[in-house]
Each structure stands twice: as C-alpha cells, then as structure tokens.
Figure 1: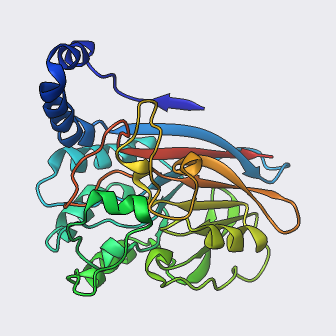
Figure 2 (figure 1 turned 90 degrees about the horizontal axis):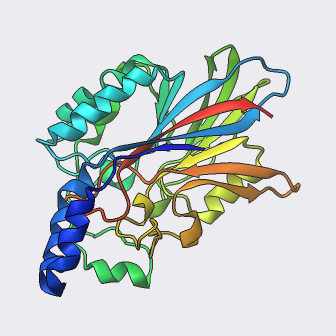
Length: 307
C-alpha cells in the first residue's frame, strides 16, 4: 500500500508543546479547522479482485463526502487535479453538499472527473442541509436526521452528474464496459436514513461486481457480500474526523467498529468468501462541524488487479 500525504511542520508542533495547555488547545483548534481541512491526501491501494486470467488492471478512483460549501476553492482545485490520475472508473459515494447553493461549484469541481466513466449514490447531505449537533452525541450512537432539516437542490445535482454519463445507482443496478471488462454495479440509497433497497445485479455474465453505498452499515455490507459482490465501496464515516494520534478513530457514526472506520477491510460472505470493502475517510466535513484532526481529507485510487 502506498500512501501520499503532506507533512506537518515540526516547528508548528514544537510551538504547541511549548505554549502551555491553553495555547496548545487554541493551536490544535486552529490547525484542525484550517490546515486539517486542506491537507488533501491521495491514498493508493492494490486490490486483487479481477479475474485471474485478465491481463491488465482497472484504476478506480473512490471519492466521497465532499460536503461542499461555496467558496472552498482549494478543495475545488484539488478535486479538479484528480483528473490527472486518468482513472478508468470514478465512484462517488455521496454527501457532496453542505450548502443549498453549492451545486454549481460541486459540478465545476468534478467537471474534469466527469469526463471519465462513473457512478454515484446519494448520502443524506445530498438531500438535506446539515444542522448543528452536539459533538458528544456521536459517542451515544449514529446521528439522526432532524425532522425539520432543510431540503437541498438534489435534482439539480443528480442531473449534473447524469448529464455527464455518470450512473445513478440509488436502489438500482447497471452494467458498464470498462477497460475490456463487463462491470456489474449495484447501489443503494443512503442506509443512514433508511432509504436503501438492494435490487440485485444486472442480468448476464459480468467480470466484476461492485456494490456501492453511502453509509457502511454492517447489514448492507453483508447483503452485498452474500449476494456475490467482488468489492464494496462506501463513505460516510469521515474516518472518525477527530482522531487520536496515529489516525485512531473514536467514533464511526454507524455500527462499524472503529478499526474499520476507513481503508480496506474484508467481510465474510455466507459461503465463506472474503469480500473486500473500502471505506473512504472522505474529503470534507459538515458545514456545522468544520474540523478534521489527525484525519486528513482524502480520495483513494484503487488499482484492481487479477486475483
């Protein structure tokens, strides 16, 4: 596994240590709310899921949880730069918005990537604007949708993606030809707000089956695995968002253990097959909680290779 990341300035860290507890707390808060939000990272993983006799690889870019607010031009520029990776397939696992006027800039940010084959599923923040929550509430369990949550321009966002040829996988399935492979895609609407319904796989023979969801609830991961998925992709967790040193998460905002809050893990299907699933730590945060600490925003380039 190759991980590319920026390096924290050691002088900054030393200054925090010397400043005393009050100043350190202020420094950490400033770092988490400024540098931490823009420390964009590309992670790269090889995943052996292609047919054993396939010659070549498939480069899959997984993006998630952009949570865009108008004016986030550093985020926009970084997202546009990802097109330089020239992925074979882009999968977006939702929560693109964090403001009702964000759609035009989200579409601008993703315009270069929308030139590549892609698919997406929604997250709750593609439907509803965020509201302030007490951060301590996450220690009691996953967040819940507020009954008075403001609706967002969902149809405008979806139309922008679909006009580029990206497939909307909300509670449906589709197939596509990518890199000489017939890829079967099956997605669900956001399980976090109980909108998910697994509809199976496209008819006919496929070389690769990919399940796609926003929130990686264990029942959803298990459904995909038991149904014969070769790979499952999800987001939602923000990698824990505020983590201990070593990127150790305290919460997941779902029923996954903190050890699986991000990265590549495996779920055992009913027939005993280990099925890899990848949880993206995501690119942004809710507009009501603009902090990332020991958890840089990220996208992941998954290079799918033969088994």
